[in-house]
Image (cartoon, rainbow, N blue to C red):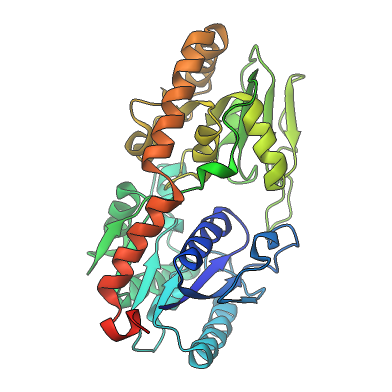
Length: 368
């Protein structure tokens, strides 16, 4: 089977795409990958070295959630149509909504990683204001979901959000994201510290919550603090406490070492349809402290120590419990590690996608 996959290079979708593409290739499938958002760095594409039956087409077209992206979306769709005509895939797997409505007769899977409306309602606790751009965005997403052969979300909560905000889906399912456990090291000596990873400029990640109360252990906040469009610094006005360290984005090898040594991972998000960083922390045997939001309850109930959403005092109390009690910290770390291995492996994710593909692609293509 030949699958054409789209991705963006600005966040967790790129990590998800790596796991998807390499998993499909290991099963003997052929993959054409087209990326948008920005041309990736050499570090971002290192995983592609020596891959067989793989064709990569990087572009820098804007993404649909960016303001003033309409012209780029039209141009990128035309480019994608040309790639499809040239490469002749059997199935289309889109990580952007816009392309779900492309004019072609191939089965297309649209993956709802996140969306503007559910982000806004989760962070602002109200519906977004109606603007010309938002009307365009709603129309784009609704049209794509209606045209898709199948819609996939990384959690049941996210699937519910798509139906709530854009209408009943013709065919929707939840396939949990996955990571390869062997990429992480759960056997390192742990330090009594707190780590979180995420876009510092994204209020949905809510990492600034860690700045609002004094904590008795060092805190490391890792991620870009520059908005891809506004180029503004996230914490320009925040008071940085002495034991808080703001670290830039890390390459995977560095992040594996940081998570491997971290005792506690703080999943502070107000909005997180899945959350790859908490999963990576769990596979590194970190104890998880998580915001009590529906997707984290769905994924980590009985495993993480939860705190009230967007409540710095509640977060501090949960963290201090783990800092003071090494046995409790080890217990939660082991729970998270076993749960992640059992439920959120890349192997399990790929098998679920392959089952979906087999149901959508004609039998003659599967045997080609």
